[in-house]
Length: 143
Image 1 (spheres, one colour):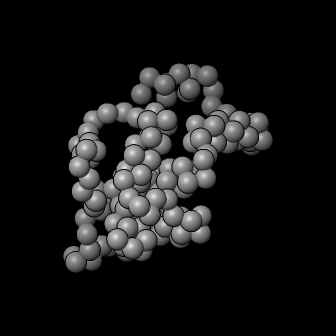
Image 2: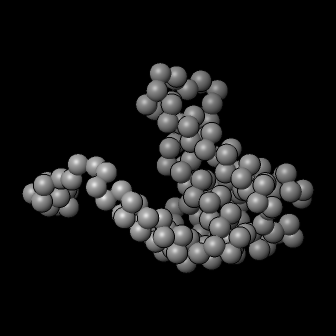
């Protein structure tokens, strides 16, 4: 299988993989488990992970597909009757898969990257937005 063919088939739900749970799997994954599951999937192919430039191209493709779905749901452009029934959730899942693949290929721990990003936002942007009153926060937590 060529790199192009494998890359084209790496969409969640469009690749049949024996030994990996189906999309109906109700399990909730932590970041280590997600990275391990993606690695198990990719490791079964001789091609392995793609180059960073190929990963970035795939990431960009998935962003475009997500944008298209968001536009269909919230924008003025209705979906053609001939277009596939994708959802924003499906496209976010595809984007997550590619993001994890990209991170794995560069030996980046998603949890560490997330913690560093959140620390940056919590510090840099702590006074950027209007804070909710405590009663509003408690009300949101109850919902």
